[in-house]
Length: 432
Image (cartoon, rainbow, N blue to C red):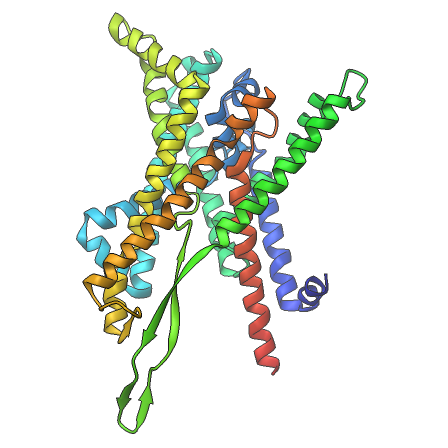
């Protein structure tokens, strides 16, 4: 509490926090502005019964459930950034621009992401509207004119780009990553509704908590504390690889001779593998819905079988877990290159004690990284399928936020605390 009071006493930092809170409030207002011409009946029940749509609604901050101009949230931008990162591996020029372009290179990469966000938003908006319409059995889009489609898609694209612009403004205040804070605000905003729904399920018709409901509530609280503690532990856990730098003489001065460490995080990929897995799992169902009413008998039959397969919670959960584990390894290989790290250590005159610089060091880093990534990947997969595990034991779909939402909240809070702490440390040095 004393640290919080110190933060609040610093006028500059206090003003930054208040401005960021005001901008986040604007994003919540956008999540309640409806898009024109759309009024899908039964949307809430679909989001409640479909884990995939429910998870998308969480990332959109409730905008999908409200069918607002921010119905996709910043999801298209996250997808665009993932695509650009993958393209840096395929296209050498993009890879060089990212590594050696400096500030100008990062600006160009950000511009590419913004440009790619626009068509991705339009395509995702169209696919989501059509899929929801067919899932709910609504024929509202059957009478859509080209002008109505244009206005609808333009409204959603404008809402997403406005959220992106607000996110970039928030990032400039160095209180946290703007995009992450927008997702964080959307998740936190849905907690009261989720708690209210759980309370309704735990009480009887007169609103009194039953003995069974009390046991369930205590179990939920215990699970929440354990999951929260595990997420914080894994998020902050890292393997420190000792690195020594030899002494070097330049002129009359002696440099180097420092012993430090190379931190390898257990979870290098964050929540990106979960986003990857959701995108892959959504694609077959989306195609199956488009072809479910096909005139070709075998195509319609195949589409029905695909839909039935993905509606099986057991099969869906198993595939979800496997994809999250696989994409954790895949994305970790993208963001951390042991050969490049080994080369940089060697260029700076460093070495890992007991190992030769170069190939031997790279092999050692590969070995350690694969081992710790296995633990991180399994943990991330369990967090992703946690709602299915809980539902299989409790037969309830309340608090479908699950471990994924908690993982995002914990990561954002830790990052925000670190940035605020760094600003406080800078002020302490300036006063000193």
